[in-house]
Image (cartoon, rainbow, N blue to C red):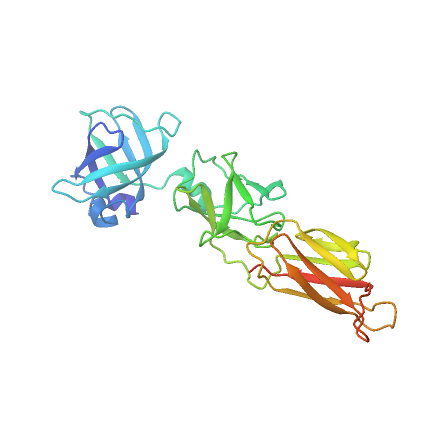
Length: 300
């Protein structure tokens, strides 16, 4: 285990700055700097223990190389007082720091529960309950419903809800989180959000609808309503805004009830909130109400 190969004595009261010394323990083979590298771009999760004071803390932090290596605590995840506060330590007691997986990380990494929640506000529960989310920790879950809008959120064990975005930070589109599928998210603690690691299918429709000549919806996802603005003319209103107005639209119509031929579907004006479509008779191009129309919108 890495914890048995990277272990050092740590000096100072903290609560965030310490000095590191080589540990005489026979289990040590490498220092933190040797194992992780130096500086804030090489962070890790560590456990600090003061046996004499019965004090311990699981922390995020990093070591910095120097004539005497130093260690900086960037965040306390859990401590012996049962909270996530930075501790003040004894300057005389011997303290040890080592690489240590904590219950919070195991709870997140080793489970894949099904979410709950309402609408785009997902919730999920892990056991044991994490006190905080750890930077760059990967969590897995199974959505109980497919996401509809561009801004779903996730609350872990009652912690504050964070938005879910794509790995590049851009907003999701409807359907990016698929019901019953396995989703992997990385905790972006700095920006209080989750980044989606499992790539959404780019061919999945962000919204779709099947409606009749009056604009009445037979079935839909990601569409709030269809407004009939005139004979053969409709506005499809999205449940959530699209990231831009250059998205692809595809569709088809059934017969128009006049000459028995399928109507032709024409795509009109696109906006982030809606798209206008019209249906015309194939024989003469006159606007007509088709028996049914199906539209699929793909997020750009």
